[in-house]
Length: 377
Image (cartoon, rainbow, N blue to C red; front, side, top):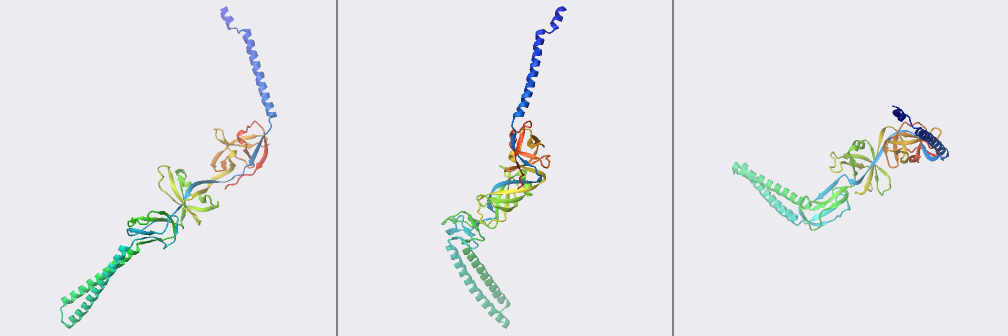
Protein backbone atom coordinates (compact mmCIF):
# COMPACT_ATOMS: atom_id res chain seq x y z
CA UNK A 1 0.00 0.00 0.00
CA UNK A 2 2.84 2.39 0.88
CA UNK A 3 4.42 1.63 -2.47
CA UNK A 4 1.20 2.63 -4.31
CA UNK A 5 0.99 5.97 -2.45
CA UNK A 6 4.60 6.74 -3.36
CA UNK A 7 3.84 6.09 -7.05
CA UNK A 8 0.80 8.45 -7.08
CA UNK A 9 2.81 11.41 -5.73
CA UNK A 10 4.27 13.45 -8.69
CA UNK A 11 7.96 13.69 -8.97
CA UNK A 12 9.15 17.16 -7.79
CA UNK A 13 11.47 17.43 -10.74
CA UNK A 14 8.58 16.79 -13.16
CA UNK A 15 6.48 19.51 -11.53
CA UNK A 16 9.28 21.98 -11.83
CA UNK A 17 9.75 21.26 -15.54
CA UNK A 18 6.01 21.57 -16.20
CA UNK A 19 5.78 24.90 -14.40
CA UNK A 20 8.76 26.21 -16.30
CA UNK A 21 7.16 25.23 -19.67
CA UNK A 22 3.86 26.97 -18.88
CA UNK A 23 5.58 30.15 -17.84
CA UNK A 24 7.74 30.12 -20.96
CA UNK A 25 4.70 29.65 -23.22
CA UNK A 26 2.97 32.59 -21.61
CA UNK A 27 6.03 34.73 -22.07
CA UNK A 28 6.35 33.73 -25.73
CA UNK A 29 2.65 34.39 -26.39
CA UNK A 30 2.86 37.77 -24.79
CA UNK A 31 5.92 38.59 -26.82
CA UNK A 32 4.17 37.59 -30.06
CA UNK A 33 1.13 39.75 -29.27
CA UNK A 34 3.43 42.64 -28.47
CA UNK A 35 5.42 42.02 -31.68
CA UNK A 36 2.18 41.98 -33.74
CA UNK A 37 1.03 45.27 -32.23
CA UNK A 38 4.45 46.73 -32.79
CA UNK A 39 4.47 45.52 -36.41
CA UNK A 40 1.05 47.04 -37.02
CA UNK A 41 2.20 50.29 -35.50
CA UNK A 42 5.24 50.42 -37.76
CA UNK A 43 3.50 49.12 -40.99
CA UNK A 44 2.92 52.03 -43.41
CA UNK A 45 -0.69 52.40 -44.61
CA UNK A 46 -1.55 50.59 -47.81
CA UNK A 47 -2.28 53.15 -50.56
CA UNK A 48 -5.61 52.44 -52.23
CA UNK A 49 -7.87 53.91 -54.86
CA UNK A 50 -11.59 54.06 -54.10
CA UNK A 51 -14.81 54.92 -55.86
CA UNK A 52 -18.00 56.33 -54.40
CA UNK A 53 -21.08 54.14 -54.52
CA UNK A 54 -24.00 55.26 -56.64
CA UNK A 55 -27.05 53.11 -57.26
CA UNK A 56 -28.60 52.97 -60.68
CA UNK A 57 -31.21 50.90 -62.46
CA UNK A 58 -29.84 47.55 -63.53
CA UNK A 59 -29.23 47.26 -67.26
CA UNK A 60 -27.78 44.10 -68.74
CA UNK A 61 -25.58 44.24 -71.79
CA UNK A 62 -24.19 41.35 -73.78
CA UNK A 63 -23.26 40.57 -77.36
CA UNK A 64 -22.95 37.85 -80.01
CA UNK A 65 -20.69 37.64 -83.04
CA UNK A 66 -22.23 36.69 -86.39
CA UNK A 67 -22.08 37.36 -90.11
CA UNK A 68 -23.93 39.70 -92.45
CA UNK A 69 -26.39 37.72 -94.58
CA UNK A 70 -29.13 38.58 -97.08
CA UNK A 71 -32.72 37.93 -96.09
CA UNK A 72 -33.71 37.08 -99.65
CA UNK A 73 -31.39 35.00 -101.84
CA UNK A 74 -32.87 33.67 -105.07
CA UNK A 75 -31.59 30.94 -107.37
CA UNK A 76 -32.04 32.01 -111.00
CA UNK A 77 -32.46 29.34 -113.68
CA UNK A 78 -33.60 28.96 -117.27
CA UNK A 79 -37.20 27.82 -117.67
CA UNK A 80 -36.13 25.63 -120.57
CA UNK A 81 -33.19 23.32 -121.11
CA UNK A 82 -30.39 23.85 -123.58
CA UNK A 83 -26.75 24.67 -124.21
CA UNK A 84 -25.43 27.87 -122.62
CA UNK A 85 -24.28 30.23 -125.32
CA UNK A 86 -22.99 32.94 -122.99
CA UNK A 87 -22.93 33.90 -119.31
CA UNK A 88 -22.69 37.63 -118.75
CA UNK A 89 -22.22 37.95 -114.98
CA UNK A 90 -19.61 36.83 -112.46
CA UNK A 91 -19.63 36.20 -108.74
CA UNK A 92 -19.85 39.43 -106.75
CA UNK A 93 -21.27 41.47 -109.62
CA UNK A 94 -24.18 43.80 -108.96
CA UNK A 95 -27.21 43.45 -111.21
CA UNK A 96 -30.35 45.50 -111.83
CA UNK A 97 -33.83 44.35 -112.88
CA UNK A 98 -33.73 43.42 -116.56
CA UNK A 99 -29.97 42.81 -116.75
CA UNK A 100 -29.13 39.76 -118.86
CA UNK A 101 -27.60 36.92 -116.86
CA UNK A 102 -27.05 34.43 -119.68
CA UNK A 103 -28.36 33.11 -122.99
CA UNK A 104 -29.03 29.65 -124.40
CA UNK A 105 -28.58 28.41 -127.95
CA UNK A 106 -32.09 29.13 -129.30
CA UNK A 107 -31.80 27.54 -132.75
CA UNK A 108 -34.35 24.84 -131.95
CA UNK A 109 -36.74 27.35 -130.39
CA UNK A 110 -36.54 29.56 -133.49
CA UNK A 111 -37.43 26.56 -135.66
CA UNK A 112 -40.41 25.83 -133.44
CA UNK A 113 -41.58 29.41 -133.83
CA UNK A 114 -41.31 29.13 -137.62
CA UNK A 115 -43.21 25.83 -137.61
CA UNK A 116 -45.98 27.22 -135.43
CA UNK A 117 -46.16 30.31 -137.62
CA UNK A 118 -46.69 28.12 -140.68
CA UNK A 119 -49.30 26.08 -138.81
CA UNK A 120 -51.15 29.25 -137.92
CA UNK A 121 -51.07 30.44 -141.53
CA UNK A 122 -52.55 27.16 -142.73
CA UNK A 123 -55.19 27.17 -139.98
CA UNK A 124 -56.14 30.73 -140.85
CA UNK A 125 -56.57 29.84 -144.53
CA UNK A 126 -58.71 26.81 -143.62
CA UNK A 127 -60.89 28.95 -141.41
CA UNK A 128 -61.38 31.52 -144.16
CA UNK A 129 -62.39 28.78 -146.57
CA UNK A 130 -64.74 27.21 -144.02
CA UNK A 131 -66.35 30.57 -143.22
CA UNK A 132 -66.91 31.29 -146.93
CA UNK A 133 -68.46 27.84 -147.48
CA UNK A 134 -70.76 28.33 -144.48
CA UNK A 135 -71.90 31.73 -145.83
CA UNK A 136 -72.76 30.17 -149.24
CA UNK A 137 -74.70 27.29 -147.66
CA UNK A 138 -76.63 29.68 -145.46
CA UNK A 139 -77.78 31.55 -148.61
CA UNK A 140 -78.64 28.32 -150.40
CA UNK A 141 -80.55 27.07 -147.37
CA UNK A 142 -82.63 30.25 -147.25
CA UNK A 143 -83.42 29.81 -150.98
CA UNK A 144 -84.31 26.16 -150.33
CA UNK A 145 -81.56 24.63 -152.46
CA UNK A 146 -79.79 22.64 -149.70
CA UNK A 147 -80.97 20.61 -146.75
CA UNK A 148 -80.53 21.57 -143.12
CA UNK A 149 -78.08 18.69 -142.64
CA UNK A 150 -75.73 20.09 -145.28
CA UNK A 151 -75.85 23.50 -143.58
CA UNK A 152 -75.06 21.95 -140.23
CA UNK A 153 -72.12 20.12 -141.74
CA UNK A 154 -70.64 23.37 -143.07
CA UNK A 155 -71.23 25.07 -139.71
CA UNK A 156 -69.38 22.23 -137.97
CA UNK A 157 -66.50 22.53 -140.41
CA UNK A 158 -66.28 26.27 -139.81
CA UNK A 159 -66.22 25.76 -136.01
CA UNK A 160 -63.51 23.13 -136.37
CA UNK A 161 -61.44 25.44 -138.54
CA UNK A 162 -61.80 28.19 -135.96
CA UNK A 163 -60.63 25.87 -133.18
CA UNK A 164 -57.66 24.76 -135.28
CA UNK A 165 -56.71 28.40 -135.83
CA UNK A 166 -56.94 29.17 -132.12
CA UNK A 167 -54.85 26.11 -131.33
CA UNK A 168 -52.22 27.21 -133.83
CA UNK A 169 -52.25 30.70 -132.30
CA UNK A 170 -51.65 29.29 -128.81
CA UNK A 171 -48.89 27.06 -130.15
CA UNK A 172 -47.19 30.04 -131.72
CA UNK A 173 -47.39 31.98 -128.44
CA UNK A 174 -45.94 29.01 -126.56
CA UNK A 175 -43.07 28.71 -129.06
CA UNK A 176 -42.35 32.40 -128.73
CA UNK A 177 -42.30 32.06 -124.94
CA UNK A 178 -39.88 29.15 -125.20
CA UNK A 179 -37.68 31.32 -127.40
CA UNK A 180 -37.85 34.17 -124.86
CA UNK A 181 -36.99 31.78 -122.02
CA UNK A 182 -33.65 31.23 -123.74
CA UNK A 183 -32.54 34.57 -122.25
CA UNK A 184 -32.19 34.71 -118.45
CA UNK A 185 -32.60 38.16 -116.86
CA UNK A 186 -32.50 39.48 -113.32
CA UNK A 187 -35.91 40.20 -111.85
CA UNK A 188 -34.63 42.31 -108.94
CA UNK A 189 -31.63 44.37 -107.89
CA UNK A 190 -28.96 42.47 -106.01
CA UNK A 191 -25.52 40.99 -106.03
CA UNK A 192 -24.47 37.66 -107.51
CA UNK A 193 -23.40 35.39 -104.65
CA UNK A 194 -22.87 32.13 -106.56
CA UNK A 195 -22.27 30.98 -110.15
CA UNK A 196 -23.04 27.36 -110.95
CA UNK A 197 -22.55 26.97 -114.72
CA UNK A 198 -20.13 27.90 -117.46
CA UNK A 199 -20.38 28.71 -121.14
CA UNK A 200 -20.96 25.62 -123.31
CA UNK A 201 -22.58 23.62 -120.52
CA UNK A 202 -25.91 21.92 -121.20
CA UNK A 203 -28.42 22.64 -118.44
CA UNK A 204 -31.87 21.30 -117.67
CA UNK A 205 -34.91 23.44 -117.06
CA UNK A 206 -34.81 24.78 -113.50
CA UNK A 207 -31.12 24.05 -112.94
CA UNK A 208 -29.47 26.86 -110.96
CA UNK A 209 -27.35 29.20 -113.05
CA UNK A 210 -26.58 31.94 -110.52
CA UNK A 211 -27.75 32.97 -107.07
CA UNK A 212 -28.67 36.61 -106.48
CA UNK A 213 -29.06 38.22 -103.05
CA UNK A 214 -31.20 41.31 -102.63
CA UNK A 215 -29.52 44.41 -101.25
CA UNK A 216 -32.60 45.99 -99.67
CA UNK A 217 -32.96 43.43 -96.85
CA UNK A 218 -29.76 42.75 -94.90
CA UNK A 219 -29.50 40.79 -91.65
CA UNK A 220 -26.95 39.48 -89.17
CA UNK A 221 -27.14 35.80 -88.27
CA UNK A 222 -25.90 34.71 -84.83
CA UNK A 223 -26.11 31.63 -82.61
CA UNK A 224 -28.02 32.06 -79.33
CA UNK A 225 -27.55 29.71 -76.33
CA UNK A 226 -30.81 28.07 -75.34
CA UNK A 227 -30.80 29.62 -71.86
CA UNK A 228 -30.78 33.16 -73.30
CA UNK A 229 -33.57 32.94 -75.87
CA UNK A 230 -36.15 34.77 -73.75
CA UNK A 231 -33.66 37.49 -72.77
CA UNK A 232 -32.90 38.11 -76.45
CA UNK A 233 -36.59 38.46 -77.32
CA UNK A 234 -37.02 41.37 -74.88
CA UNK A 235 -33.71 43.15 -75.50
CA UNK A 236 -32.83 46.18 -77.60
CA UNK A 237 -30.39 45.34 -80.39
CA UNK A 238 -27.76 47.23 -82.33
CA UNK A 239 -25.16 45.98 -84.81
CA UNK A 240 -21.51 46.94 -85.10
CA UNK A 241 -19.74 45.96 -88.32
CA UNK A 242 -16.13 44.91 -87.90
CA UNK A 243 -13.49 47.11 -89.55
CA UNK A 244 -16.14 49.76 -90.22
CA UNK A 245 -16.52 53.20 -88.68
CA UNK A 246 -17.59 51.69 -85.37
CA UNK A 247 -21.05 53.24 -85.49
CA UNK A 248 -23.93 51.16 -84.17
CA UNK A 249 -26.77 50.40 -86.57
CA UNK A 250 -30.24 49.81 -85.08
CA UNK A 251 -31.51 46.26 -85.55
CA UNK A 252 -34.55 44.18 -84.67
CA UNK A 253 -34.89 40.47 -84.00
CA UNK A 254 -36.75 39.01 -87.00
CA UNK A 255 -36.67 35.29 -86.41
CA UNK A 256 -35.38 32.54 -84.14
CA UNK A 257 -35.31 28.98 -85.42
CA UNK A 258 -37.69 26.69 -83.52
CA UNK A 259 -35.12 23.89 -83.28
CA UNK A 260 -31.64 23.96 -81.76
CA UNK A 261 -28.55 22.86 -83.60
CA UNK A 262 -27.91 19.24 -82.53
CA UNK A 263 -24.16 19.77 -82.16
CA UNK A 264 -23.86 23.21 -80.52
CA UNK A 265 -27.30 23.32 -78.84
CA UNK A 266 -27.73 26.89 -80.02
CA UNK A 267 -30.56 28.55 -81.91
CA UNK A 268 -30.01 30.46 -85.14
CA UNK A 269 -31.32 34.01 -84.83
CA UNK A 270 -31.48 36.76 -87.45
CA UNK A 271 -31.45 40.48 -86.72
CA UNK A 272 -32.67 42.81 -89.48
CA UNK A 273 -30.48 45.90 -89.97
CA UNK A 274 -32.43 49.09 -90.58
CA UNK A 275 -29.51 51.03 -92.11
CA UNK A 276 -27.80 48.58 -94.45
CA UNK A 277 -26.36 50.94 -97.07
CA UNK A 278 -22.90 49.95 -98.24
CA UNK A 279 -22.79 46.59 -96.45
CA UNK A 280 -21.33 43.53 -98.13
CA UNK A 281 -22.41 40.01 -97.32
CA UNK A 282 -20.21 37.70 -95.32
CA UNK A 283 -18.67 40.42 -93.14
CA UNK A 284 -18.27 39.80 -89.43
CA UNK A 285 -20.55 41.80 -87.15
CA UNK A 286 -21.32 42.02 -83.45
CA UNK A 287 -24.92 42.16 -82.26
CA UNK A 288 -25.01 44.15 -79.03
CA UNK A 289 -28.02 43.68 -76.78
CA UNK A 290 -29.23 45.66 -73.77
CA UNK A 291 -32.11 44.94 -71.42
CA UNK A 292 -33.46 46.62 -68.32
CA UNK A 293 -33.09 44.67 -65.09
CA UNK A 294 -35.38 44.34 -62.09
CA UNK A 295 -33.48 46.18 -59.37
CA UNK A 296 -30.80 48.67 -58.39
CA UNK A 297 -27.14 47.82 -58.91
CA UNK A 298 -23.72 49.40 -58.61
CA UNK A 299 -21.29 49.36 -61.52
CA UNK A 300 -17.71 48.66 -60.40
CA UNK A 301 -14.43 47.97 -62.19
CA UNK A 302 -13.48 44.33 -62.44
CA UNK A 303 -10.54 44.95 -60.11
CA UNK A 304 -12.88 45.89 -57.24
CA UNK A 305 -14.40 42.41 -56.85
CA UNK A 306 -12.46 39.52 -55.33
CA UNK A 307 -13.34 35.94 -54.54
CA UNK A 308 -11.42 33.79 -52.04
CA UNK A 309 -13.56 30.71 -52.58
CA UNK A 310 -16.22 31.81 -50.11
CA UNK A 311 -18.10 34.08 -52.48
CA UNK A 312 -17.64 37.44 -54.17
CA UNK A 313 -16.83 40.45 -52.02
CA UNK A 314 -15.61 44.03 -52.18
CA UNK A 315 -13.67 46.14 -49.71
CA UNK A 316 -15.29 49.28 -48.28
CA UNK A 317 -13.41 52.03 -46.43
CA UNK A 318 -14.26 52.47 -42.77
CA UNK A 319 -15.91 55.63 -41.55
CA UNK A 320 -12.55 57.14 -40.56
CA UNK A 321 -11.02 55.97 -43.87
CA UNK A 322 -8.15 54.19 -42.14
CA UNK A 323 -9.13 50.55 -42.67
CA UNK A 324 -10.80 48.39 -45.32
CA UNK A 325 -13.76 46.21 -44.38
CA UNK A 326 -14.91 43.24 -46.51
CA UNK A 327 -18.50 43.21 -47.75
CA UNK A 328 -20.17 40.27 -49.52
CA UNK A 329 -21.85 41.16 -52.84
CA UNK A 330 -24.00 39.44 -55.44
CA UNK A 331 -22.64 39.61 -58.98
CA UNK A 332 -25.52 40.42 -61.34
CA UNK A 333 -23.59 40.69 -64.60
CA UNK A 334 -20.01 40.73 -65.87
CA UNK A 335 -19.20 42.82 -68.93
CA UNK A 336 -16.06 43.75 -70.81
CA UNK A 337 -14.60 46.23 -68.34
CA UNK A 338 -16.97 46.28 -65.38
CA UNK A 339 -19.14 44.18 -63.12
CA UNK A 340 -22.65 44.92 -61.86
CA UNK A 341 -23.18 44.01 -58.20
CA UNK A 342 -25.87 44.36 -55.56
CA UNK A 343 -25.09 44.60 -51.84
CA UNK A 344 -26.26 46.47 -48.73
CA UNK A 345 -24.28 49.55 -49.65
CA UNK A 346 -24.96 52.90 -48.06
CA UNK A 347 -25.02 56.12 -49.98
CA UNK A 348 -21.54 57.62 -49.83
CA UNK A 349 -19.68 54.35 -49.24
CA UNK A 350 -16.24 54.19 -50.80
CA UNK A 351 -15.36 50.91 -52.55
CA UNK A 352 -11.69 50.15 -53.05
CA UNK A 353 -11.01 49.60 -56.74
CA UNK A 354 -7.23 49.19 -56.81
CA UNK A 355 -5.27 46.83 -54.54
CA UNK A 356 -8.31 44.93 -53.27
CA UNK A 357 -6.60 41.54 -53.62
CA UNK A 358 -3.93 42.30 -50.97
CA UNK A 359 -6.06 44.03 -48.33
CA UNK A 360 -6.24 42.97 -44.70
CA UNK A 361 -8.85 44.30 -42.24
CA UNK A 362 -6.13 44.59 -39.56
CA UNK A 363 -3.78 46.68 -41.68
CA UNK A 364 -4.24 50.42 -42.18
CA UNK A 365 -4.93 51.92 -45.59
CA UNK A 366 -4.47 55.37 -47.07
CA UNK A 367 -6.81 56.81 -49.69
CA UNK A 368 -4.77 58.34 -52.49
CA UNK A 369 -7.44 58.83 -55.17
CA UNK A 370 -11.21 58.93 -55.20
CA UNK A 371 -13.15 58.36 -58.41
CA UNK A 372 -16.79 58.78 -59.32
CA UNK A 373 -18.87 55.81 -60.30
CA UNK A 374 -18.77 54.58 -63.89
CA UNK A 375 -22.08 54.97 -65.69
CA UNK A 376 -24.10 52.25 -67.33
CA UNK A 377 -23.65 51.97 -71.07
